Length: 111
Image (cartoon, rainbow, N blue to C red):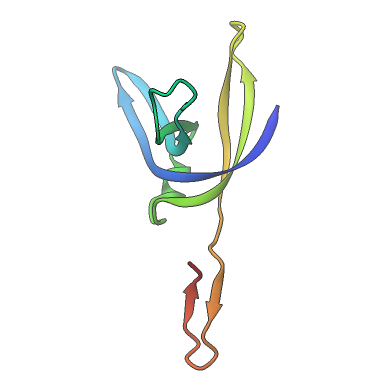
């Protein structure tokens, strides 16, 4: 099952290399999620990891500012063990609304 969601991206890390003889190549993004406040023992936010199977996504994201809003394309896939996992398929940053000063031509992000 594929779906899209709008999130706050808190950070990103990429890795391409070898660990214990295993070749690894991936990007992990960290997305803000609200903590479960229903029991009264948690409040605020945490970060959830989403993995992308190639470091190329890190290369595309590394010069972006954080945190930022983005639309993620995710896919829920079966693991073959009766469980499922969510796989990141694409990241699309959401550009902030901008205003242009007609006298100077300066472009500013709306707050």
